[in-house]
Length: 180
Image: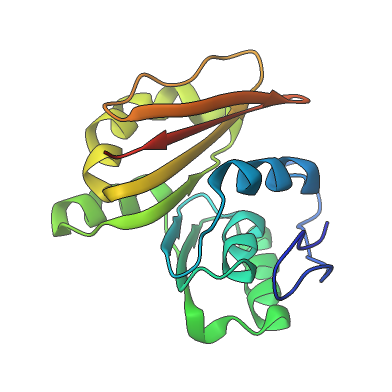
């Protein structure tokens, strides 16, 4: 696993061992950022970060800042190592926090993001749908974009946002929404 493009192109990423974390493949990350286009200067939230591959890819491609949340000890260790290895400690915050809690807190505080990268464990996706419906539209800045990664066999979530594109890449469905 590596950074696909940008200032840290080709830099290797550490992924936690085991099957608890499913890092987004290089191919899927390339597809996501091809759909998104320019992310220069955006603020990013990666609330189910795992190794941080999605948010770190955004930073490499010019995002101004990324906030990461993760609860797994092994994934958190890998995420922090990746942030240090890439030299992004000044441009991001890493919290040991449940992504659902972060969404609720940020929504209650009125925080918004230009780009949200949502890639929870696939087994949790259906259980998260109600919280996503409640919080995600309010967390996305006007003109902001939301990426939700899920299993290929499931459709896109019905959110109160414009579905810009939904594509299947191998066993993964990538859905990109816009806040108009």
